[in-house]
Length: 87
Image 1 (cartoon, helix red, strand yellow):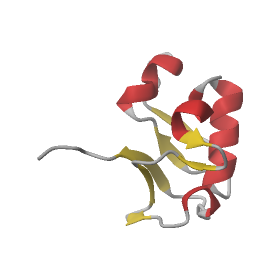
Image 2 (cartoon, helix red, strand yellow):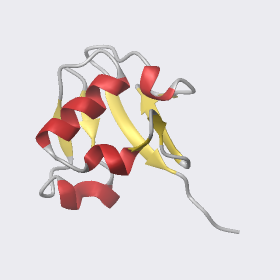
Image 3 (cartoon, rainbow, N blue to C red):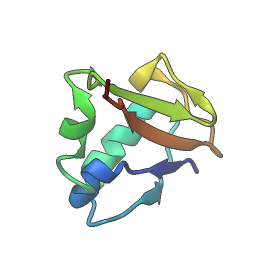
């Protein structure tokens, strides 16, 4: 089962849960299951049918360019990574 790391910015919606194991084969399936368990999470991660601008997802050790369409191996670690601003 993939292990999903919940970003600190949305842990208020998960009751402080930092990681969760979810049976899923794509990032889209992960988001659907997170929303079922923690209502409101999808709106914080997605805009329409895509990840929110400024948000990336890493599966294993790779940042995905496929967003919600990225396949997820059973033993993967999945991180939702917000952009870091500065200047």
